[in-house]
Image 1 (cartoon, rainbow, N blue to C red):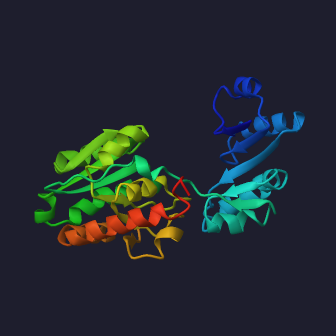
Image 2 (cartoon, one colour):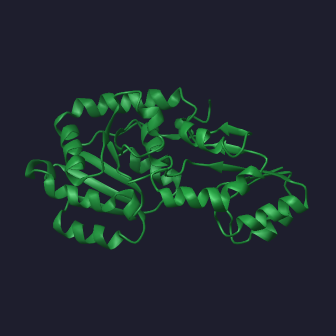
Image 3 (cartoon, rainbow, N blue to C red):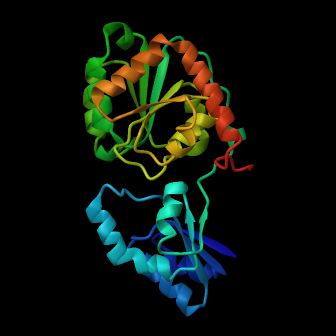
Length: 280
């Protein structure tokens, strides 16, 4: 029996009920991870971590990781690393480190529908790290023709929701949807053409995987882990997270609609043949 944990609030009862032979821990600093590790040691249960890369440019976080969490990694039975950069980093602490990226069932995604307008979408948390404010500011740099002929949908939740609502009073092309399950998200993605994913930093990025599976084009930050798959192709627009850069990328796709189709088609091919496809 394998138990995968994000450290839910009923952890003790879950562990007692499930009595796993192996535990996979998705994270390294949650307050309940010590409880998980203590359980594993007491019951002689093997455990490993499944981890994204960390931001090496955030020197304080890197220092704290080595001091506070390095031993957790060393004393585990191994690490499943999400991407090449994560693999190289965690290999320093744990020799039993293996590559295991997130994966997705590509077959579940629908073919995109035809739309009169150019539809953009953001999927994720409404927080500063995800570049929400930069997206909102980018709308001020679009020309009137574009503003009159696009739709931009935000899907998610978070503290910056109010800012999105305020901006929607200024621009009627903005739509706001609540966080939704994968089944409903698949339907929404089929009504959109371009995913905007301008994270200031992202260990990986699941939303781009979903967009690729839905045959969508991508405008994506240079600071995302998934770029190790995308950067080898010309099927996305990579940006530094600044409002003018976002507006420029949106304008490019608006005036080059053939590229939307071409990039979306190639993105689907790319994810189908990669380890990001759960069938592989």
